[in-house]
Image (cartoon, rainbow, N blue to C red; front, side):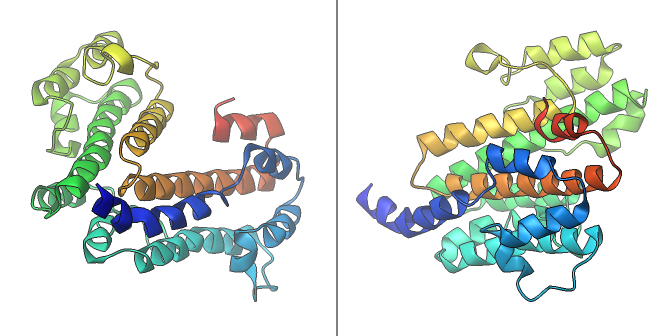
Length: 275
């Protein structure tokens, strides 16, 4: 236990400091009050995290340039984290890197990526790291599959044969037969009943309604908080920080887009905060 604490102490301390610089609710509210993209750019240039990114970029004038720098901030964070990792820790977090969206790199959220990554996790040398990796990637895979079937049935009215090719062939807490039954469900009500009987909704995990993207992010957030509490000296806080940073970037770009198209403040708030 002492060796494990020493192994992760520097990394976790660094992550805690980085997490302390994430935007607060109060800061989001202030940004939501801006009327123009120029006002938002001016604020971000003064902000503790993004101010460093904008240093030397006084020529920035439009939303596209702003978003490019915002997305690149996660690359900078990822590189900083790697510097604090030992070789095994670095090997673990690099499995997550293809999911990060940089300026010119789209995330690799496809079947092949998840299938290969799951195989790599099964061969991972450290048991504690493997446990965290299985929880993070397994939960994500299960819910990407659930949400894909949900959207396919509710919005696209797709048949079973059209849904199956897009399923990630990996099963964590979600059993294969449960996913098959979801695909065969004849109605959204039947689908939701099947989901409600899975491990994610039984007992303590019966905590939300199925609402497209909202459910996915609530599940992931709950998972990260739980594993960080259970394994504080581990890779869990690292993955949680990267997830939080991704969410922050998505919220900022949504705000910028909303301001650009003059969307009502309350509507933007609903989009990024669900309220």
